[in-house]
Amino acid sequence: MGGGFAVLEGREGQVSEAGEGPSELVCGKPSLAGSVSQRACVFCGSRVVLYPVADAVHLVHGPVGCAAYTWDIRGAVSTGPQLHRLSFSTDLRETDVVFGGEKRLYASLSALILEHAPRAAFVYSTCIVGLIGDDVAAVCRQVSRERGIPVLPVHSEGFKGTKKDGYRAACDALSALIGTAESDPASYRGESGVAGSPYSINILGEFNLAGEAWIIRRYYERMGIRVQSVMTGDGRVDEIRGAHRARLNVVQCSGSMTYLAKDMKERYGIPFIQVSYFGIDDMAEALYAVATAFPEEPALAERAAVIVAEELAQALPALKAFRKDLEGMRAAIYVGGAFKARSLVKALRLIGVETVLVGSQTGNADDYRNLSALCDPGTIIVDDSNPAELSRFLQLKGANVFIGGVKERPIAYKLGIGFCDHNHERKIPLAGFEGMVNFAREVHASATSPVWKLLAGHGRSGEAVS
Image (tube, rainbow, N blue to C red; front, side, top):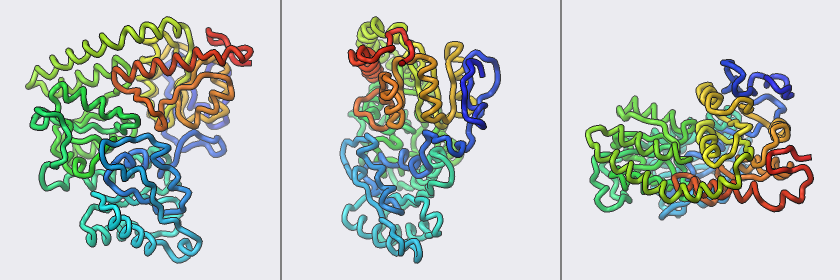
């Protein structure tokens, strides 16, 4: 690639610059040994998808350390049940490794269901379970028969692949749940007048990290769209069981939920579209795309246009004020999914910020082609990066703010660069029109903080930190 950027041997094809030509970025391969990849394991990916189901028990079958990935790390919030906030583990010990952990799993499941009366239970297999060969599915079937609720194995042994493989394991568990409702769930939470609407959707890949599923649901309901289920933000088991009755699947996180959308299209004939709820342009397009999917009702598009106009009237003046200070600054993006990264590039451009580095953990070839076409020439495009690479790229490009997740935060602060959390730990909604204003406010507060004046070499126009 251009610029003379040094990368680890074996990763040369996974880094490029926008504008270099039609060469394909290498992606979808296992992380290079020793590279200290920012990716998470299979188990982590499965928990990302399933954990926000609020009225189910989530039992980690393995050592207690794996159960540290709890609600306090993922900010999934609920309007009702809080069962997902509790982290349960079978806490396998040395004797279980030798003699097997199936008895412990059976006892743990039975006790948890008796005590908490969940609508379903998910059992996550971890690395050690894959090694000792426990028949988790058989135990789940037995407990399901005895207790009368769905008990679903999640085959998420961490060593089987990457976080993306965990998404698929979670989708398999959801697929086993979908279609099992005998009638429409009585727990539908729609607004008055919308519950009976024939224009119904499932929202896939929205995890309600800071109440964002509520924002998105309100937009659609204002249009006259009935939200059958959200998978899985503020999720309910009964609504997911009846998800096969929806007329359209709307996929927000393409990396995690496209597999399930394709499965539902094959099994139930439900079409799907891919959208993003981040940024003004993509949020508006997400509303129009759903309206277009129901051409027999032109009023849906008319209502969508009214919503967009009303929301823009409130958002644009605030964004204009932030742009005044941010114009000419430089940002770096490294997030889990490349589809979201594209939205962030456009959102930053709206507030006058140039993207000089963008990458993801799980992007595919189409994602990176689209990113390269979207970004300005010279922008670094990277797949499955690591702290050493990211630190070097940030310095070379003179970024003022780094947008990422919990693992990227220390990199930014060690280099004296502002940081914006756009991952699972945040407490402020960044989706929707109001979320775009929150995002601009957070970028502004971080990039323009007076603390950077104390660091020699950090300039407003993007000079590298000394």
